[in-house]
Length: 200
Length: 173
Image 1 (tube, rainbow over the protein chains, first blue to last red):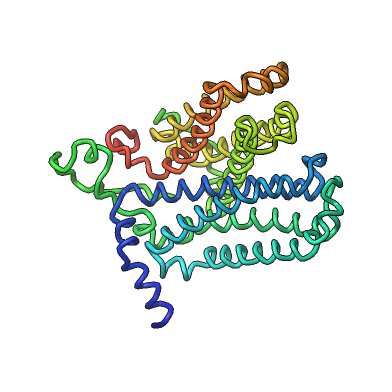
Image 2 (image 1 turned 60 degrees about the vertical axis):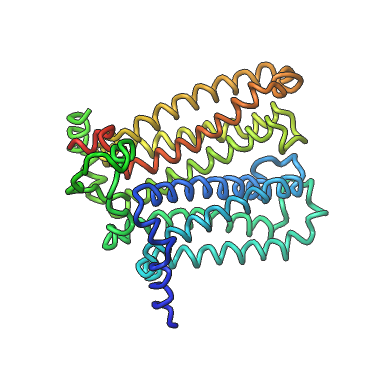
């Protein structure tokens, strides 16, 4: 099976079909994705600023990173799951989108950067745990981490604007809205709205 | 509100952003999301410290001094970037139910945060010894954090306001 057939099979999956068929799933997936990324970036920022010696200089680095990185990974799992669910609704379009590809490369770089931190400043952390800032290699990787995560946010936001050709799939056509939801299946039939504002 | 939004969309700053919207809108939105991350991160640090779940090597007051100003700063960043987004697309923002519900949540959060900040700065010891252990205070802390979730959801729903059906002013247009 080639790659585009694989992407097509993702689009044809039951999960993708149910996200597409609901008016609510996609917006809520996006919202949960934003909440999770806020926790990911928020906690990474706190740890990186500590390593850079900009904030929380008086607290032991390992204490902060041990406490916070559990939150970071938990939130990262949530954002990866919601991201994957959004991806499968329109897999072929996203897979060929430049911003999406850039974002995936940036995420991989953020992972490599984290490995670089562990292999350099992470090894000597016992020596600088209570110092005002990490050694040079640690400061460089902490700075790179901040830049990469900001770039990831930008690339992620641009995806929503550059998949406009496939907008109908990004925002499922409203087959049902809050009125129908309240009135239930027996409610009055509702004409599909002629023009739905293109969400972005 | 509709006519105000339409008037605003004809003003020079709005027209300027609209002319460069292909990159300016995503750029401002990215700034706005970064602001959300800083604000939520700071709010999370203060909430979890209040609940005693992390950062207990610091006093509540020290924790507040560390993260309070970052939350305040992030709120200014959010106000500025959010303001620009309104100027850029007034009808998309102002003529929605989600936007106004979000503003109600933001106003509530700002008031709660301001009261908390002032009180912790003035009565640090009392917060440490008794207030932080009170179930009502802990519940309020958790609810304030839930409020951040509502703010984010409603913010994203501005783009999908039609899901509110007849409650949304956008569907009347």
